[in-house]
Length: 250
Image 1: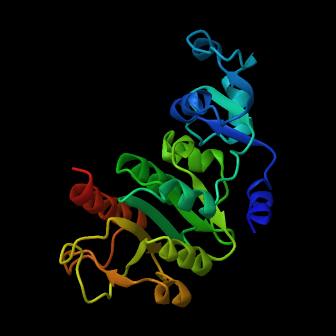
Image 2: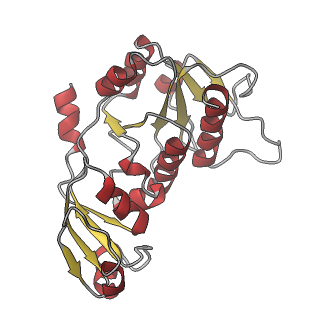
Image 3: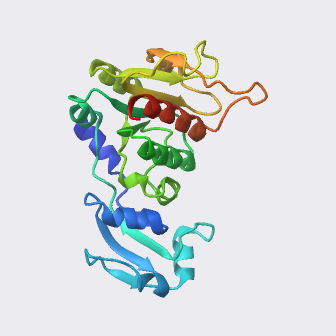
């Protein structure tokens, strides 16, 4: 299974990261292979490059044509290989002897901006990984990395063919799966989140799929005003991550 998942995570052979924070974070990540960097002259002249990665000085218009005129690339892009696959089995191994560990599962969250923002919050609040289904989830991309502002290099993004199976594996490894559901009976804060906790988020429109919800140990909702139906999924996830961090790491 791990070999199959690894092949799926390596479908993209080429990746262009853009923007100062994503490129700098990639350069600092020993697990990231960077083939070359394109930068405008003013950026290239100030670039710290101890690894001697090839740098090509280009015009801003060339970068625009590569990543799009609306991309906030700040005059720098990097041609990279996708990160080596990190599997659920690896996560379980690495957290086996820890009493406290936090993981995020995203079910049908398809917007790369939201996934990137959740990666950033996960890095800020001590999560060990973000898990997404192989179908209907964004690939590793420049847009996702830009939204993550460097966190893609810090927090493993694990792709799995079956979320329910991944949840079962984590529960056998002493994790509790807590689903975020606006219709849940309990509000977050009524009970402490578990020490080994998986926060499960569904899409903004449909929420979690049935099997995903059924595999949660329990569900909670955020105590928000009735004048607002719901929060953006990345905002809701950040609040849940903060609550776990406040209880267990502060």
